[in-house]
Length: 236
Image (cartoon, rainbow, N blue to C red; front, side, top):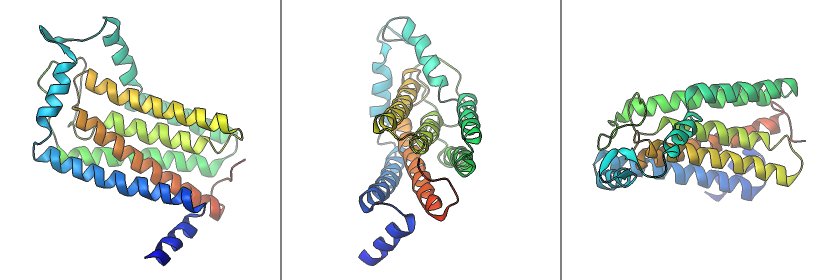
């Protein structure tokens, strides 16, 4: 077992602790997703989910969210950051930057990670087919099934993958930290907005975050292997 783990670490190329953390995230995230999905399918999370959604609405009028009036509009703006249109534009902008910087290997990795993430999100939704919440009126249009949250998953895939890959462009540690912090913040805000808008259960968002984190981590580890092979450009 130890010999096999050592081989995986060497194959991925990198410091032992860094690779071990990545493998732990993938293993724990996958287990957490499957465990949560099983609880959702059995209906064990429904009472918790519905209570959280109701708590985000006014008791006397469930069509009105808690908070000042501007928060509803802000929720729509924030949730749009996880929409297909915005994520495609962000990915295209990043691809353009990488092309101008002549980092063609990284460019194709970004496009591949994004496209495969969209495909996985669609496949998971088609498999679980959980209905959308119906305990409160939706504050915006919602399509397809509810589990996992596609906005949450794809914002994690795109923003975290881009954040991890773009840190290889910068030398200063503070810039690397800033890029990753922004990616995490955007991912968190998008997921929270989906619950606030009443179009997803909290467990949908949590599952989306876990699936997206696992996918982004896989892409990051793959990038280390491809970098070692010379397929993508090394850090500067």
